[in-house]
Length: 170
Length: 114
Image (cartoon, rainbow over all chains, first blue to last red):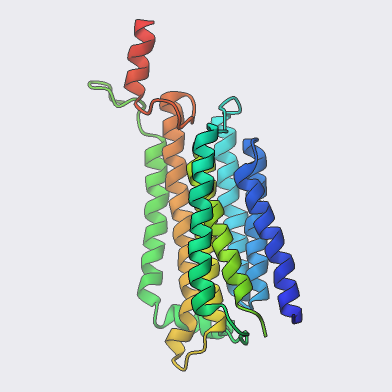
């Protein structure tokens, strides 16, 4: 076990544990806050793997923006009374499907790519920037259009007249 | 040097947790939490492959981190629209319980009959 292995094991255990709590917690707000820890841990994983730029963007966009949006949605809907937990058969079947996904995906990945050791030789930030503004410049520009569209669509959908009955129009 | 088995194992665990979160939750926002975990697993897979695989081609070598950045951005846009839909749903129904009837018109007629 090298130093990077130990480091990744520690961060990965935090990520997986908080992810488990995020999907198991019966309190809505607690689940959202455990999601913060999971996504932060994921940024730590990126950092251990040597992708500093992706780690920083993950922190900024996910922990900074997405989770704040989720918390705001929880506050605006203020649905603390809604039961979160589904029936035991549904949870059992969901756990079965989830475990099946883990086993299938993990088995396929470990069998094909998991053996041996690998040097962490990712491109540095300069190479990533060259890739974004070189090879991937058109998808990158399209992404800004997508974000603008999502913003406008979000406002339009959230302000749409409620109900959708015939004859009722704001 | 790093064992690539560890990141791949975490990818599988996060994907399984995401699927469980999507299927086993009643609250609509918590279903979205499961979707976020699934997207996180996808991002980690892209970064792991991008950082451990060796490629002589410059464009191929940078595609891992660049595509992860794209996934993160698209996930942000997706969350904005999804939460707007949930807000509209909450205004129409008064709750976000996915176990209840999804059509608000039926609820209104039931209330009128009651």
